[in-house]
Length: 238
Image 1 (tube, rainbow, N blue to C red):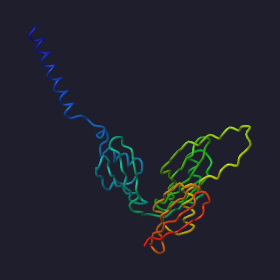
Image 2: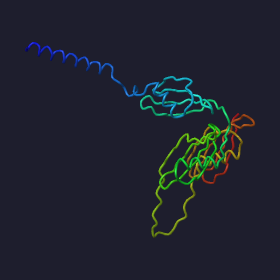
Image 3: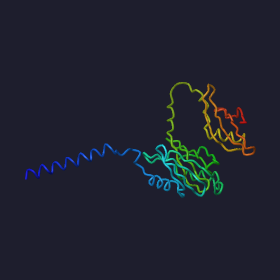
Image 4: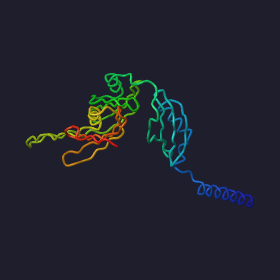
């Protein structure tokens, strides 16, 4: 009876040792928490369309999928399944069908608040609608074809300063938004926006808006003053 007891204890110790050795030799890393199939299913649920191709590189799944409005590629983090980036590879389908008013109504129905600004973005055929609530600033991407909410970005609004007994001082001019700078650049040049950068200076800063001219197929960089909102320079690439 004693021999059987020690025999059972010995087997248990062996099994436990093998399990511990397997854990240390083959640990499950955080990067294994999302499989390729799970990442593809997540993209289909988020954006719809049909998966065309999927590859794995540097801790990300690169998933290419096609919708009625074009072909996209999404980078999905293997560790947590988050979509880190979404890029339109090829535009197709119809051009915008919704008016600014309809896009504004779609955004208001999705998020409460006051519409402050609306901007059409040709790349992606969408509207960017800025809405302010009592505590938040929200920018919604609205499909110009279907009215679907493609993305929502939120940021807290600064609380208004409480009044004091000090003499009132004139509020400094506010820096114009990036969307406003893009709109001003498009008034200067009819083209497609490639990139926007902001540079801070002692007189308020400026935006550099890189655009492709639709007429000449040349690229230009338009400098927009960040306070006055005026076009400072236009430089053409050779």
